[in-house]
Length: 81
Image (cartoon, rainbow, N blue to C red):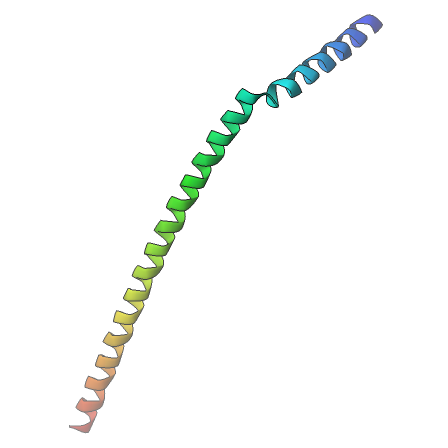
């Protein structure tokens, strides 16, 4: 039982060290760079969509404001008449 625990510890340490080597290899770094580039492209796309949405909301707000001003003007004219 004691040897089993020591063996598992040694095996875990070995896999851990090899995992660190694998994760810091040139190939792994290329994968990380490609993944990061994809995330940056996605971020740019989201920022572009948010900007478009903000512009549209600004246009809608301006149009709604104009509609309300026109309605208020007509109501004042109706009261005067």
